[in-house]
Image (tube, rainbow, N blue to C red):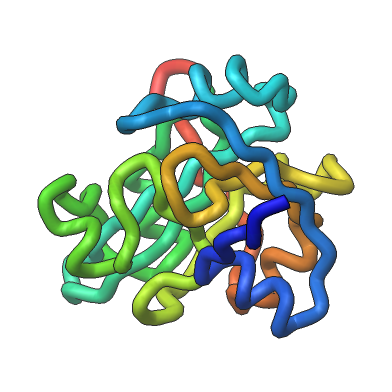
Length: 162
């Protein structure tokens, strides 16, 4: 068996002695979270995507939300104490995070940005997040993710008509 190539996300989990599982799937380019879950067999409600946003203050923030949901920008801004936040432009993802679109993990970015994990993650003993490269998903306990990212839980997704 060939030596497994570790991503920064995996190295951080290893360093903090946090157990995780790796799921590798065939994929050459960006696909959305729903297609990733389909490929890996991961339950959609336990699969989370990583969004990077910038606040009015120019500070960057990481939001980890269910793949089938959309972020509520007002709720996201409130959660991090900003007047407003906006999505990081795709062309800036690698420069800010060190990751590429579709392979962006909340763990192991160039800097540890304030991190918000959607509160629904609390309902699960493990969630599925990007492993730090396209074609790699990792499962991790959400409380462990909060600990290692020094993050917090908050409700930052759109509901109904907002």
